[in-house]
Image (cartoon, rainbow, N blue to C red; front, side):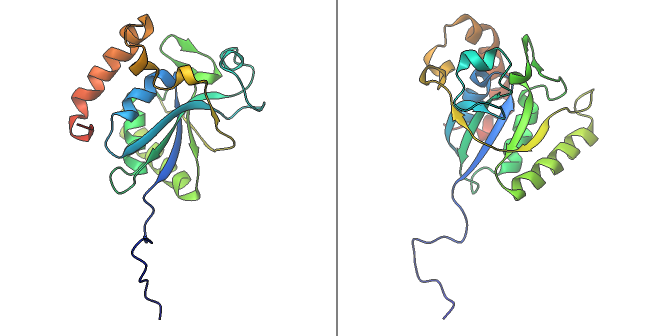
Length: 190
């Protein structure tokens, strides 16, 4: 009697969501969008005090929000742990409220977990990366529960893809994408 005969019901989830802050969301979006198993990337804001913040409000650094990407992914293709390992490799998780020239709490390194399992994995990966001394300084990445995710304005979505000749894209994102692609070739979508 306990048998599952429904061919459409799966015993494993085929979609999960992750929300990560690692500096400017324009830099994170194209990297995660290029990975096998990532089905959707949305740029947005979370971790702040006011509802429905605008980009201008977040940029002033007074709302408490971080610029983040929210990923929808297939855990059968890419695990949350793999996503975190890539996350820790593509930004500097040792600089408090800063990524390169971008400074302010909106650029903090953060994992906004959705489930207790994500919290556990985040803490384990954090500890592994810190113990391996991959970075010369200790990690400052915050691990905190996701509150509300606010989707950023439309012009921020797929910013690099839609604005490859923009100076910031040419100077910052293009070199980052080239370096990332070289190191993670086997994980990239074709």
